[in-house]
Amino acid sequence: MLAYLQRALRHEFGAAQQFTLQAVMARALGDTALGQECEGSAVEELRHAQRFAAALAQAGVPVGLGAVASFPIGGSVAELLRNAAATEAAAVRLYRDAARTCQGAEPLRQLFESIGAEEVIHYEELTRRLRRAGGPRA
Image (cartoon, rainbow, N blue to C red; front, side, top):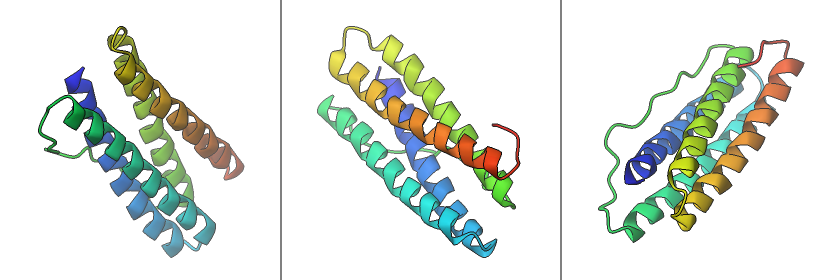
């Protein structure tokens, strides 16, 4: 269970980094609305990271990061959206697996399910926007 918390923490920091850089790229591509959305997503991912870090600390594990997950950014609006959606899909899979593993450890199971549900919503928003932009689903 602790390994899942540590993987989740690395994933969320990587996602925050991805969205931060995508915000810069979106603005450079002239899509200020997407830039703002990516910036908001980066903040959301940092909040998720804080929740996972708090769970590690509560478990008595020294909170450290190690290598942060690295996700692709993209050079077009469609690539930005596709890469972001792929990152969210990976989070959904990770947190579903973690929730199953945490059966019987209810606070952790609920944490993974709660953040996983937020990631599903974000994935769906990204794929809707990607379809509107004319790109294939992630």
